[in-house]
Length: 227
Ligand code: GDP
Ligand code: MG
Image (cartoon, rainbow, N blue to C red; front, side):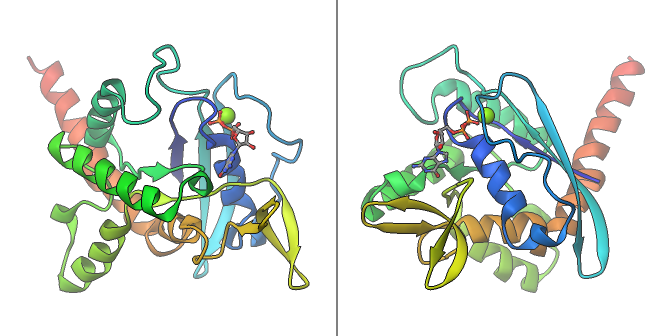
């Protein structure tokens, strides 16, 4: 079992993104989502489970959607000191995958500059994000993961709707100037995020959680109880 926790300020697009993840291509094979009623403002912790099948391996995936982190402190929109402190702590106990939500609201230039700023902030604040360099096992791993690290944070777009594009139903957001296709890598990086989370790195995420994060936690608790 793998647990995804979706955190961030309310209104950011978390619930929509969680829905998109379950409606996107990989998970269409899985059990039907129980989230169909549409999205209302998340007021409690909500947990949705799916059994997904990748390469013949079945795995229970549970996503916990949170109401919003740091809502009480409302000034700038992104990476406020509280977020940085929170992410720093989070990065020590779980795998953190930062994303830029609603990236359809940014121009390409803005997206690029925002990415660079976030990367800089992560680095200067010593925030560990997944996949961590120190856990690359060999050169092959490193080459693959470097490609992912170059893209982090993924600039994603979420939706709860499908639209017809060239006769096909696609997940997208319809605007006056066309449909932003959520799963089209030319439009945004949602597909990269989905592939990382539930395709290429699903097993690794599980291993890192078990062998590193849980083990570190266990040893720390044991030491505390022996004081
Ligand atoms: P949450 O509070 O973080 O769970 O945010 P929601 O998922 O409820 O989304 C808040 C609002 O943002 C809703 O009106 C969504 O339709 C909208 N929204 C969600 N994802 C996107 C996105 O990728 N792009 C745009 N433009 N709007 C989005
Ligand atoms: Mg929500």
